[in-house]
Length: 126
Image 1 (cartoon, helix red, strand yellow):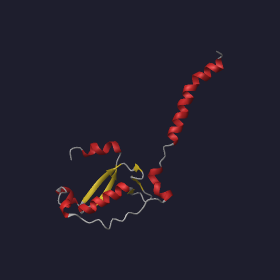
Image 2 (cartoon, one colour):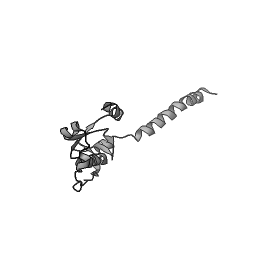
Image 3 (cartoon, helix red, strand yellow):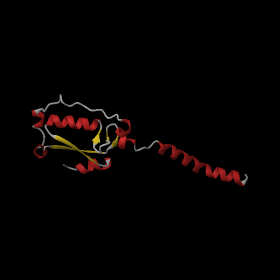
Image 4 (tube, one colour):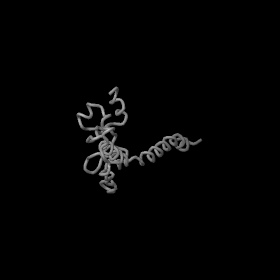
């Protein structure tokens, strides 16, 4: 086997690996971080028909009821479920569901950004 051909055959696996990595990473974008700023596709959800349910609100643990706020931890990189809107606030259908639950329980709601792998461990035994 001549030297140039041997060199080409040795380089082939690396070239395939680089080509595969390039095509895989080309699909990774940061689009979900500011999805609504370019596409203007974040719908407004009308929650006016959702009313507080006193029987369910009574089941909220006292410390949360006294605080008056339901806090949600979310990795804000899963559009359209949860992502950062153009105003820097958490948006997506998960935030809409949270707001509806808050209304049913008579609580305001807030979302804190977190790395997904840290959300469950941060709850611990709380």
